Amino acid sequence: MSQTREVGRVVRGMAASDGAGVKLNRVIGGPDLPQLDPFLLLDEFRSDDAADYLAGFPEHPHRGFETVTYMLAGRMRHRDNQGNTGLLGPGSVQWMTAGRGIVHSEMPEQENGLMQGFQLWVNLPAKDKMTAPRYQDIEPGKIPEVESTGARVRVIAGSYRGVRGPVQADATAPLYLDVFLEDGEFEAAVPVEHNAFVYVYEGSLDIAGRAVTRGELAVLRGGDTVAVRAGDAGARFILVSGRPLKEPVARYGPFVMNRPEEIRQAMRDFTEGRLA
Ligand code: FE2
Image 1 (tube, helix red, strand yellow):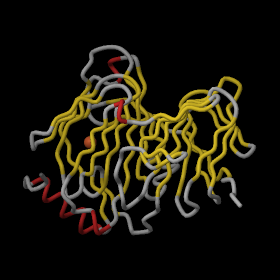
Image 2 (spheres, rainbow, N blue to C red):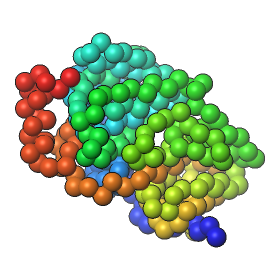
Image 3 (tube, protein in one colour):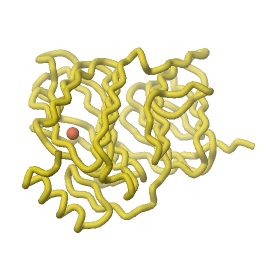
Image 4 (cartoon, rainbow, N blue to C red):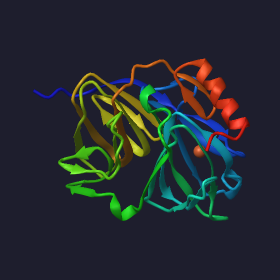
C-alpha cells in the first residue's frame, strides 16, 4: 500500500545577496530552514534586471559537498583554477562535486535579459568529503522528459516512471524533477526514509489539502508517494528528495565538513593555496 506524503513545514525564502552582490531568494540555508539533510542550501535566482546578477560569483572555494546549478533562463560561465570551463545555458545542469576542494567562478555571460535558475547544495558523507573534484555538465538535450496528460517532467536525477536522469550521486541517491503541471494531478515515488521537498516557482499547488504557492517550499513527510494537484493556473515546481546522511554538520560559508577542526583546516588549505 502506498502512503501519500503530508506537508510538514512550509517555508518562504528570504531575500539574500551572495557572490559579488547577486540578488537571490534563499529557501534552504537561511534561518527558517538551515538545512534539510542532505540538502544544505537552495537558492532561486530570477531577475531580468542585469543589476541584480551582473556582478556574478567571482573566484571562491568549496569543500566537502556538491553544488548543483540548474539554469532555466540565461547563461552562466563556469571556470575553475584547474582550467576547467563550461557554459551553462537554459535547461542545463551542472552537478559539481567539490570534494576536497575547488576554487571557481560563476559569472553571467549576458548583459541583459532574464537570468533564472536554482543552486542546490547537496552534502557528502564523511567518507566522500575529501574525494577528487568531479563535474557532471549536462546539456539540456541529455535530460529526459516524460509527458503525460497535463504534465511534463524533466528528470534531472533519480528516476520517474522508469526513466532515469543522467546525474550520478550515489551517496545521497537524489531525485530531482522539474515539473510543469498545467492541470490535474501529479504523483511520484520517493523512498520512505528520504527527505523530500517541493518548491513552487510558478502558480500554485494543493498538496494533501494545503495550498503551496509561488515562492514557497513544502517539506514533505511520512510516505512513499508525493501527490500534488495543480492550482487554477497550473504550476511549475521542483521536487527533490535524498537520503539523509545523519552526520554532524560543521559549516562556514563555502566549506561544509563534520567537525569544526576540519573547517579550520579547509580555511588554512584555502589561504595557503592547497585547495585545488
Ligand atoms: Fe560556487
